[in-house]
Length: 183
Ligand SMILES: Nc1ccn([C@@H]2O[C@H](COP(=O)(O)OP(=O)(O)OP(=O)(O)O)[C@@H](O)[C@H]2O)c(=O)n1
Ligand SMILES: Nc1ncnc2c1ncn2[C@@H]1O[C@H](COP(=O)(O)OP(=O)(O)O)[C@@H](O)[C@H]1O
Ligand SMILES: [Mg+2]
Image (cartoon, rainbow, N blue to C red; front, side):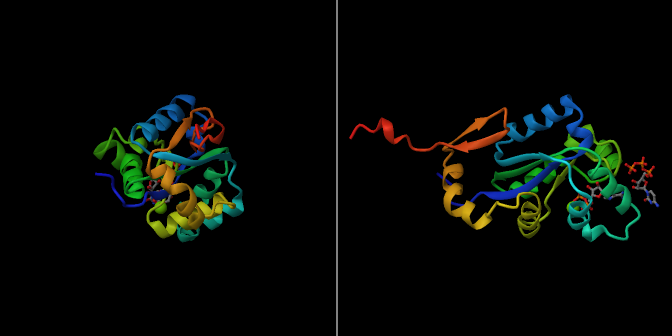
């Protein structure tokens, strides 16, 4: 039976130390594809201090805030809007616990268990709720309109009418080719 539940969106960020490491980056990309996520948008960018402070505003005042903001601005990060069934929880499960020793001890095969270097440099980010996913996507994909995506693109993704472009690391909608019409 085809599920009518719409796909959920989440923001995944691969943090700078991962983007610097081709092996880690490829392994994490493999995990994304092998777990049936659709990659709706991808973008590599150096996060600005302003963006980082806004993105991590909830952590302002914590002892790790300054190192966190400094670290995420230290080099390019890969941003991905991922779609999937229960994408938010699923991506967070694949990442594993926030703290790297917990990840290494309790969930060694997760992304953070494998590629985390410290509690700050823990390899990846994932939105923690549908509300934060929408807000976070807006910060890094300014022209992405979630409502429009659900209206126009989601049905294609939901029906699997997309193809994967490995170079751009993004799924593209299969447009109907009217030139091949037999009518
Ligand atoms: N006042 C502090 C300082 C540290 N820690 C914990 O100890 C960990 C290790 O701290 P630290 O050695 O400073 O981390 P680094 O190895 O320097 O790595 P990073 O700066 O990337 O977190 C922190 O991440 C944090 O979980 C803590 O709970 N309270
Ligand atoms: N105790 C800590 N020490 C150092 N950095 C931390 C600590 N807790 C969180 N961080 C950093 O701040 C980011 C945001 O924290 P949080 O939202 O609590 O975790 P998560 O990324 O799992 O949602 C973490 O991914 C990590 O990079
Ligand atoms: Mg968080």
